[in-house]
Length: 166
Image 1 (cartoon, rainbow, N blue to C red):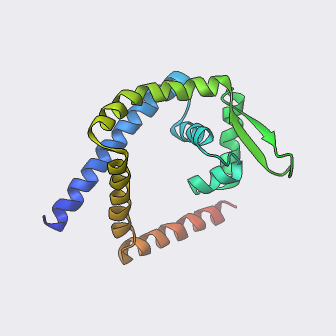
Image 2 (cartoon, rainbow, N blue to C red; image 1 turned 30 degrees about the vertical axis):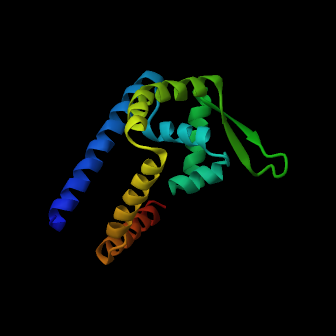
Image 3 (spheres, helix red, strand yellow; image 1 turned 135 degrees about the vertical axis):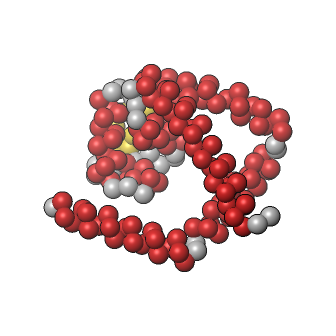
């Protein structure tokens, strides 16, 4: 296969997968009045063992303050609640409320049929290998010098925008 064919097929599949994800998130988001980032925060609160705002910020590679604001909105909407750590009151943990769990259950129902079909075709080991392959392909392209240079340039542009706003 030619490199251009590989990359276009790969990008097309990623685009289709992203569009499917967006349809599900937007549909449920409208029903529950949630943005995609709020949806993703709820998913991580449900899935992560470390439910601190700092851990969420790291996982999204976002500023602690931005994630805290999103959590405030989710708390006001009744999806999560906060609890300070008993050991260190600077650390705040997040938990789903009944309404938050209901939303996540609704999402899980939307994808469970598809996942059951997948499980009939792919073993858990094959699924793990699939993700390892996806990571490998992504790493191959992400670690090219051109991509690294472009990322660095974009990061510098964002810093300049932020600096100019202040």
